[in-house]
Amino acid sequence: MRPRRHKQRVSARPAMLHETVTRGTPNT
Image 1 (spheres, helix red, strand yellow):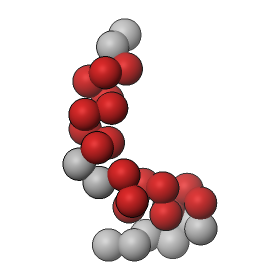
Image 2 (spheres, rainbow, N blue to C red):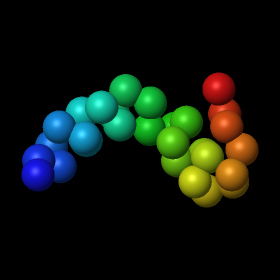
Image 3 (cartoon, rainbow, N blue to C red):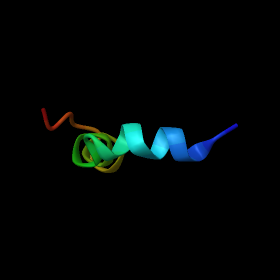
Image 4 (cartoon, helix red, strand yellow):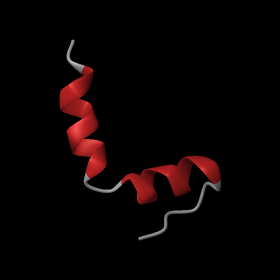
């Protein structure tokens, strides 16, 4: 279980993931 690996992947597009979880609308 290495959260660091996931962090790097999420760093590629944190805005998209955050927007989808915060507003529920994909900001692609």
